[in-house]
Image 1: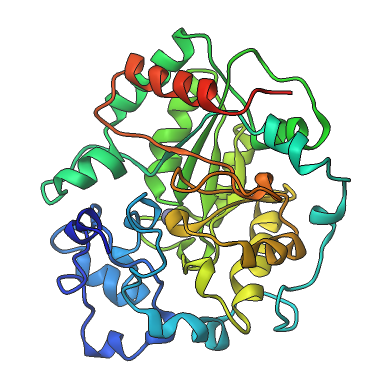
Image 2: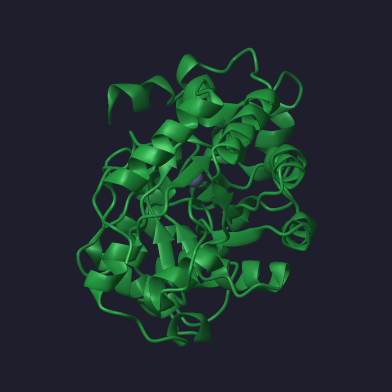
Length: 348
Ligand SMILES: [Zn+2]
């Protein structure tokens, strides 16, 4: 665990009471983030209602926590799916191949690598800072609406066009043309302020985004509802999976593949009406062993953060993202996008 990760890792402070602690199997992996929406009077309700989901938000998606060693509750990893599996299918390793992952031929890795040059921004919460937000949270995980709007305005003013993950996929797999300066705007986890703040701001700026949602939180206080998922799509947004409960993919075994990959994809596909085939790794953490499982589960792309290069053989399952910093001005965000595009392999 890095120092930065530890700094926003209030595990002890967020530890549920004994009654809740007994429900290890229900506890999401990432309850070690900030608790921005948990204010006095709400926290107990939240804890009681969702067994510790109050802390489940953000740190998992930070660049500092992706080594696979920072789980607050690693012992529960293997058993999560056993008692609360929300999905379908038999508990086979790798799940059942579905149409989404098998629909199209795949170009060579070299070609794919050359096309994987679109900058992708990763946001988490769009809301005013809360009094208990740490400095790290304020910088990396929460962006106030006015700062978010300024970043969007800057991106737009610089001539960037927000594209959907499908457009990026079509480019990766088929070489479809993209705008001159494409960017993908992504949002991880599924907090309700993404629906309430980010989506309207995107629409106001004529932009689209992709929302990577972990399905366990849907309908819980502070998180999107199932109806919100459909409304996002109706508003021109896209939906991707961020697993069921944010467990790190590098730690899966047994039924985890079905629970985390297959069932979350099927649920989100059903709710959104989209064939959900885009995936974002919790914590940004991944390894080559998970890649065939993603394909078998029906995913065609997967997004990490910036810590590893593209996978040599499966670049489309290791797409890199820039974790947006809330203090960046519009021009500063643009500079990051420009640098990403410049440093990426030349687009074919
Ligand atoms: Zn996340």
